[in-house]
Image 1 (cartoon, rainbow, N blue to C red):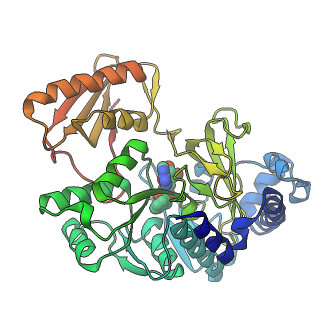
Image 2 (spheres, rainbow, N blue to C red; image 1 turned 90 degrees about the vertical axis):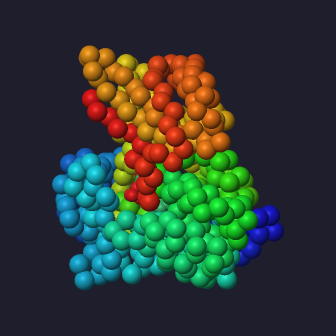
Image 3 (cartoon, rainbow, N blue to C red; image 1 turned 30 degrees about the horizontal axis):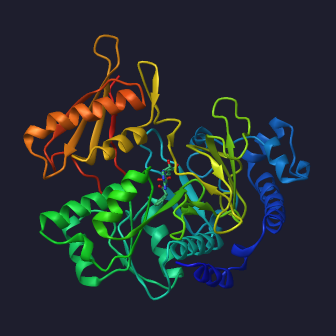
Length: 433
Ligand code: DLL
């Protein structure tokens, strides 16, 4: 993608060429009507705003958003299943639901307009990653209640692409269709992309010589080490797509292939804030904290100041005036505290990928056998690594963990291919305390 291509995107969607002032006046207008809609049509918001002593009319500038109360995952759970829907049920065209691994699922709803907006934002995301009408998109995110599959699917259609609706699983068939149907783009979790890579190797095919040019990866954290791994294994550009069901699904933010400098937040539809996770105070751009989103155009389920629990920082716009977010470094709820040291799984992954003999397949076990936390990391060696070299790699990783994060862990290097692979989001941490 070149600056010429950016002009093409602006010609299709003039808002991508807007300056900050234009963008912010659109945001203010949309925010005002979102607050009014939520307050007038949803008793949960009426109650929450009244309890906080605020009214939609109190919003005079974008900064006044900070006067309004947060919405949390617990609020959505309490209102299960439809309590945050803000239009008559007959106007709801589709629902999705979060997996609910940590409790009850959260059900989210969309009107026909919401679905059109979502499709357009995923289409914009695909174009930012270098996709164009007429290309073929292989979708290997799971189809169903998860927003990944259907979100990517309708976005690719809206972009004028041909969709291959593979869903997750059937890994051998994924390889066969990538080889036979010649897709240009793949949309999949980065961890499942690694499983597809294993399958290429198992079948004896060269993953670098496929038709794929671009991968659009998200739904779970992945760092620069993983980007380098996937880009070189498949000879593609790997771009980050971010989103969550509560806000919409994939396509809330997307990284441009041109810059690969973190996802650009589609600020004409969402307002992002970063808050201190403990105090809830808004922090300045550039400072790390919890990402909070407010929807600007959603009808069925407007969300006001939703606490995502994702940790990142806001960066200035690069390709457009819309701000970017740094890659998600972790979640407030996936931070491990091991003997008092805070550690995110993503930090461990980056160090694993610095060890040339180790593969990005790992599991982290935390136990407390004698009232002391113990961490065990089981990580696969590269296929070409001989058994004798395992010990040296384990020592190297242990040293890196000690030097960089300050934790001691037992490292066990396992045979290549011995750890389970996931067809969706990877579950690598087993906290058994
Ligand atoms: O994972 C939506 C999605 C599907 C995004 C496909 C991208 C691609 P949920 O299942 O509700 O929705 O999970 C949302 O996943 O709060 C983050 O913790 C994590 N997440 C999503 N995208 C990224 C990303 C979908 N690019 C939760 N990097 C979010 C890091 C991500 N974490």
